[in-house]
Image (cartoon, rainbow, N blue to C red; front, top):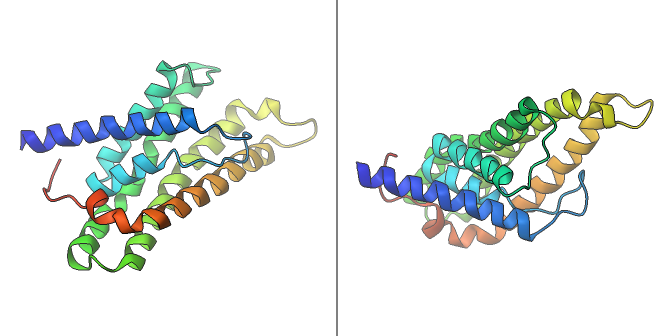
Length: 192
């Protein structure tokens, strides 16, 4: 049992570090349009090990953002919401882990089911993250909205564009990774 726990902790750490590395190496052209696949390591972790591991990986990634100076901090509450909560909820992609593991075991050649499951997991994790960012955008960043524009509209445009573009980029990359799902996602041991 402790070997499984240790292995999961190692995977959490590696995936959080990979997410940070991708984030640092591939900068986005703007705030509202992101050509980024930085969530993929956390989504893969969540599909391998479940929601708890995915959430812990996202939490650690948020912490690493701060440690490396890659975080924008206005207040402590904003920091906690946008870096700990928002990054943690990417792990909600792990809701699809039992289904993905069953597909990989029972239908290992059904690439379409694997890709659809991974895509749905990406949408759920990404949407959860951007709902948190939307709320924080209204609450903390609304004063940066152009004159006459509602903070709700401003946050929706900025965070909605980022959600759509980043989610689409992740899904496209997952299409190319589908052939690697068996060795990448399948867990031969159960538990945490």
